Length: 77
Image (cartoon, rainbow, N blue to C red):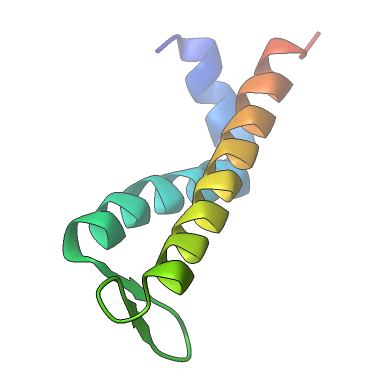
């Protein structure tokens, strides 16, 4: 990683923190087969459609935050 990109992550720490959190949480949810929400646990074996829906939404969020961080770095003057 270039020092310029690390500086960009420091300047945009809320997005970088969201990206890190999502990047850490998704593999945990995939490995355990349980998606934790603030209301209940969603188990892959009990309700697979809802589980994979949450995984898809969080993956889309991870891609959107990553694209925003990388895109803002590349488009910075």
